[in-house]
Length: 97
Image (cartoon, rainbow, N blue to C red; front, side):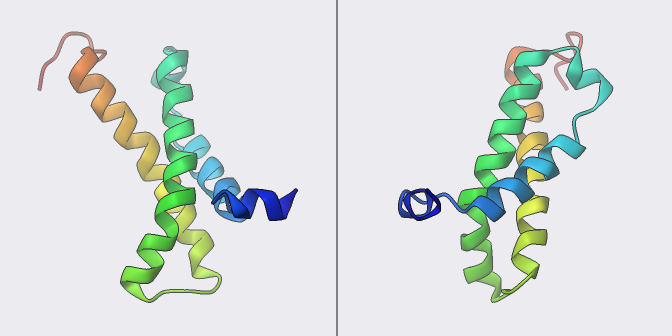
């Protein structure tokens, strides 16, 4: 199963690190909107999976640092979806700033 996942571009370690990074950032406000929370968690998980190798190649960091990068990218992925959701769907109480 692991070989199949790696074959299709899924690194289990990066997915788990990104998942936990995105779960850590789920705030009380985000839990009121389940759709936004789920989208953010998925975005954080997949951004960690697919962007960690890009960041590793660009920075030259490798080894166990990769898992920390995946965690951070999971965190950033969730926050990015929340900001886009607020901007385009005006989920911040009508404030357009």
